[in-house]
Every structure is written in C-alpha cells, then in structure tokens.
Image 1 (tube, rainbow, N blue to C red):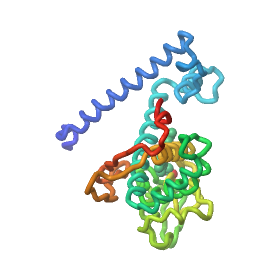
Image 2 (spheres, rainbow, N blue to C red):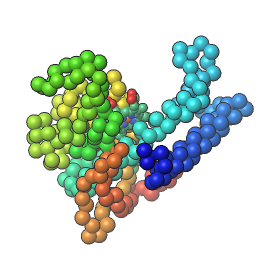
Image 3 (cartoon, helix red, strand yellow):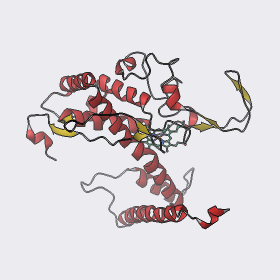
Image 4 (cartoon, helix red, strand yellow):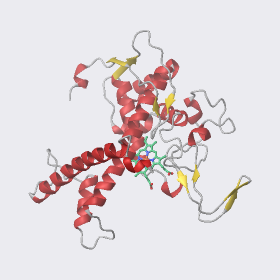
Length: 288
Ligand code: HEM
C-alpha cells in the first residue's frame, strides 16, 4: 500500500532517467530523419549508411513491408539493443582482462599467439580473429566462470504443457529459471570447475549456440541471444587489440581478486585497474 507514496523516491528516479533516455533517443532519431529528408544518405566519408536505425526507419516508411513500426517501437528496439549489448560486452572485456592478468601463463600464451598470428609490425584486423584460437578459448573459459547474465533475470522459460524433467514435475504455465552460473561450475559437468583452464575449450568444437547444455552464456532455444555474432566478434577484436598493442600490469603492490557482485549484469566486485604500456615498437601504428 505504501508503494503508492514512493517513499524511497525510486519511481520518481526511474521516471527522470526514462525521460532522459527518451530525449537522447528522440534526438538521434529526429536527427537521422532530418538528414535523410535533406538528402544526406551517407556517413562523413560518403559511404551509404545501412545501420540498424536506418533499416528500421526504412521499414517504417515501406508501404508493403511485412511488419510495420512506429517511432515508439523503434525507440523500444534501440533501447533493447543498448541494454542487452552494452553492459554485457563491456563487463566481459573487464572479466577476460582480469583473468588474463590473474594467470601469467595464460597471458604469455595469449601474447605468443598474437605475435605469431598478427606480427609485431601490424595491428589487429578482423580477418585475424578466426586464427586466434587460444584467445577464443580464454574468452569461453571466462564466459564459463563469469557469465554476465548468470541468473534468472533473462533466461527464464514457461512450459506450455506439464512435463517431467529429471524426476521433477514441471507444471504447465510455471516460470522456470535457469541458473547458468551453477551449471557452469557444476563438478558433474566440468573437471576442477573452479580452475581457470582455457585448454578445456580447445577441443570438441565448443560454440555459443546453446546446443551443449553445459555451456549457455548466451542462453538457448528460440529466445537465445540474437547478438551472438556481434558480441563474439566485438569481444575478440577488442581484447586482441588491447593485448596486442599494449602490455598490461597491475598497479604496484595490488593483489588482483576475481570475485563478482550480483546485479542485472554480474560485474567484478572491485573494478579492474590495469596499467598499459606500448608493446609494438613502431609508434606510427598507434596513430588514428
Ligand atoms: C557478451 C555479450 C552478450 C551476452 C553474454 C548476452 C547474453 C544474453 C542472454 C543470456 C540472453 C537471454 C537468452 C535466453 O533467454 O535464452 C540475451 C538476450 C538478448 N540479447 Fe544478448 N548477450 C550479449 C550481447 C548482445 C548483443 C551485442 C546484442 C545486440 C546487438 C544482444 C541482444 C540481445 C537481445 C535483443 C536479447 C533478447 C532476445 C529475446 O528475448 O528474444 N545481446 N543475451
């Protein structure tokens, strides 16, 4: 009953933030509509623009499109992407860096692979990424121990008929939460589950498609994360670039700890502080 009075100011706070986000999105959308109607179709370099917003706006105006959108729905979709993509990816970059800094052997192997595949006279390009198999295993092992969406918040299901799973009756219509964090640390699924051991992902063709129910960082089934290809590429590209172009160390006398803090996205309890230094001798590789 007291919630109506909003004693802690949560609703007011949420309303203010929502209005702020709404204004940001309005500005972006209105700006793009103006550019489109004044004939500016490309980016600053004159390339045709085909980003997510442009495609949604074109669909909105298409008369015979199979689905129709209005501006409110476009704003909701943009918001969805920002919420689903931003914190998950940036949190993972921090976790992978933390685990690499925490495991000097792993750091050496990651650097050796980068030197071999990319060379010390080049920076990372997208075509190098499929060859970085050890870095890929490091990212997967980090996903196993620190899935950014580990708990029920997103990965929940509601069966449309009653069924039995592993001796449990799951009634129709109930909400089933998947505890991915626990699945990823279950000794029945993994040998020495608390050990950070990327090598376990070097065999058996592990992927993120949710077919192997021991490893579900992006969920599974038809509501699986649609951002897997983008998330996977962004992570590999950002991390490869960070570790190829820079050497990283912890501040003097700092002990690294890797405990997590529960939230919408599971972040490091103590944010990582790491100090970079130039790794490639050719300084021109660091210019724009
Ligand atoms: C490290 C990166 C990411 C992780 C760990 C992650 C994880 C997840 C998980 C666990 C779900 C729930 C899946 C399920 O219920 O089975 C989800 C849903 C979703 N993700 Fe991601 N995600 C990431 C990046 C992205 C990116 C880059 C985008 C978009 C560009 C994105 C867009 C979405 C959307 C729209 C949904 C809701 C799908 C639906 O309900 O049908 N995610 N994500």
